[in-house]
Image (cartoon, rainbow, N blue to C red; front, side, top):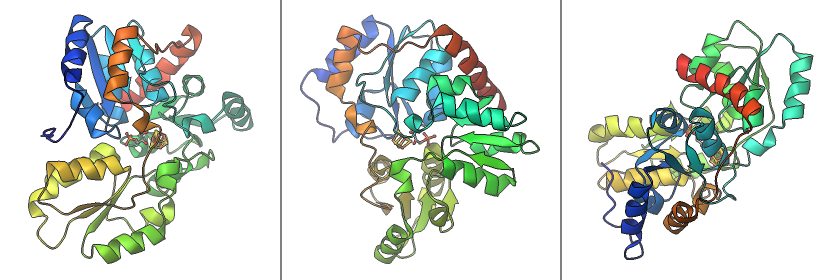
Amino acid sequence: MENYDNIYLEPGLKESITKLKNSMNAVIMAHSYQTHDVQSIADFTGDSLELARKAADTDADVIVFCGVDFMAESAKILSPSKTVLLPDTEARCPMAAMCDVQGLVDLKKQHPDAVVITYINSSAAVKAESDVICTSANAVKIVEHYKNRKIIFTPDKNLGSYCSEITGADIILWNGYCYVHDEFSTGDIYIAKHQHPGCLLLVHPESPREVLEHADFIGSTSQIIKFVEENASAMDEQAGVIIGTEIEIANTLQNRFPHKKIYPLAEHAVCRQMKKTTPEKVLKSLQSGTTEIFVEKSVRDKALGALKKMLELS
Ligand code: 13P
Ligand code: SF4
């Protein structure tokens, strides 16, 4: 269970958000990389796959998405009749911006037989040019499903290369990456292991290959959290875990398990775009309906097919 006792919000802020949210039949969804403050006002917190599933299932009229642009867009594609709000329009994932539609169309022409698997961290237009979407929680499973075909994998080269390694699939990689995870280095591992001897290293598959090679466990955000939940009782005085993903995950886990040794792999692992959302901006978003996300119907219909294929396969 999350512990939000140490959160300080402006007096009355949480009450104002709850009152307005209830009157609008709105739901607040937050990615696990959001600040603890934002998570404390959310109805659901999760990784990309969990939030996509929630967006597809919710019966709320309004979804306030505390995350980044592609997540709000995916929610709109999955729930087109709902109003989807992104509290800060500057919350845009740089990796999603690394894949352009024309480039993907050209690559498809060069490999007409290839199946296109696109990471959910992509624009709606790129999703529309894809056969199936994946998240880091189901990427290996989805690549495994298509491993007898040639695969174009966009945009994350690190996740794509990890999937190729695990499944043996022949994958054409796009040259995109997440700056937060791609900056992890063997130097970070050397320092962390030296400072925290005996700890297990848990790493997100958006990290470079030389970092993954040193990991004791590789998993998406929710899989890393689950690993710690399941192994917390066995984590003794001597050993703990080093968390190789965005810093909020180590902070959240330390908060939940205050007597366990939980360390971030590196202090630099901060997604600046994820931190743009604040509880104050969530209230403003509910009050003024900003900023509403729209996806053009022709794009939405095609992207929906690819997203539904993911949900069906995972
Ligand atoms: P997951 O939520 O799938 O772990 O992905 C991490 C991420 O970088 C989200 O932007
Ligand atoms: Fe994009 Fe990386 Fe930030 Fe996720 S953590 S939103 S992939 S930059």
